[in-house]
Length: 114
Image 1 (tube, helix red, strand yellow):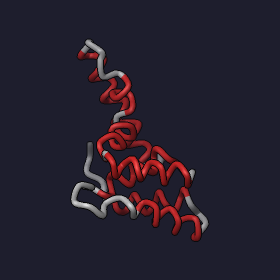
Image 2 (tube, one colour):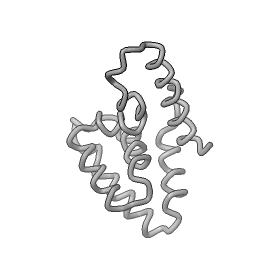
Image 3 (tube, one colour):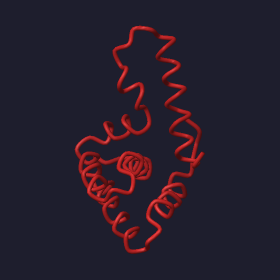
């Protein structure tokens, strides 16, 4: 994946998804729950993944943040590699490579609002 300024994209996504300042501040507070412990790496990347999965649903945002605290790898896999996560057991290497490319494009499009 290309290098992105995750902090900047996170800010842009929050503004786009939560145009109301009060709601945006609530979302920021919920997301701030992830990344407070040493076992919670890459807070901006994981917070972006949480946003992608939960959308603007505050209850889902809370639940997904809690899930990320349990195991952030699940949240990253579901957000960044949804097709590969579903099709893990596929024996065809060519098909897996295609899914990797589909996942990468889908995630980059979401990050860049395409």
